[in-house]
Image (cartoon, rainbow, N blue to C red):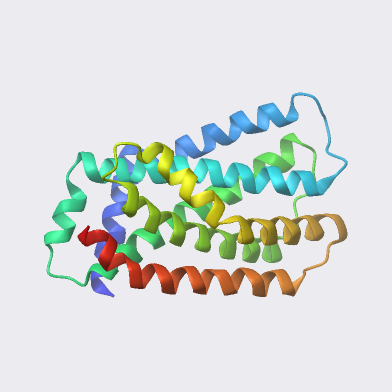
Length: 217
């Protein structure tokens, strides 16, 4: 646990100094918001809003992953971490947690911005927060694993979204459905929550097993 805290501290200090993750995330989200709001003052079909919200979450998150791992490579941090006498899966866990925190904070800010500019009622906070946490965790687990898998490739900017988006389609559908029902009908559907929990656990177990093999290669 002590190793994970030290690694998290390193990621937070790096983000505080460079602001390479949250700022590009929000700037890209503003661009999508502008394109979405260009021809409408209010969305009548709120399921479309949920779709655009999580779509912008994913594409902005991919930019965040690319910037975070580019910094690790450019500064040589990833190679230094691999020489430390610590279990390698702790590197994966700490990077996943740090990206999860960044993504969740950005997702909350993004929902606030979307609800204000598109004149949409902010969903009930705690059910929405649970949906966002489960969605963000699965996305960060899968995104962290694939970022490590593609970071040595010359075409990593193309490989990461090509690999990540198809694998994350089931949680994307579940999150979109759960959020649209929550906003439209104020109903919290547990079946979609169980679906997100299942994929979060599945992605984490598979990623934890594969990480040692991926980082060696």
